[in-house]
Length: 77
Image 1 (cartoon, rainbow, N blue to C red):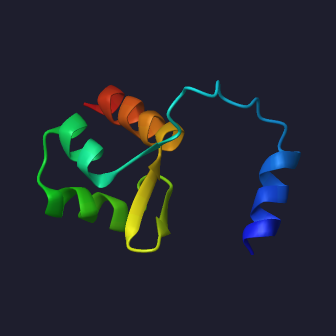
Image 2 (image 1 turned 180 degrees about the horizontal axis):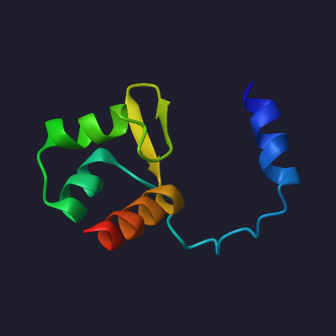
């Protein structure tokens, strides 16, 4: 499954980010960015408002999808 997803992303033709650019946020970073509690950050992830992946016991949130969601949410206010 992971190999097929990697293949799919490679075929999408998206430009690779610079090596020093962050590609994912942690729950703690989401908390800090939004100024919310840990529980609320987990609830946002659970609602699938942006792309996230679980790696072992950790969750990583796609920076690109989170930033797009945040920009979209700001325009709706």
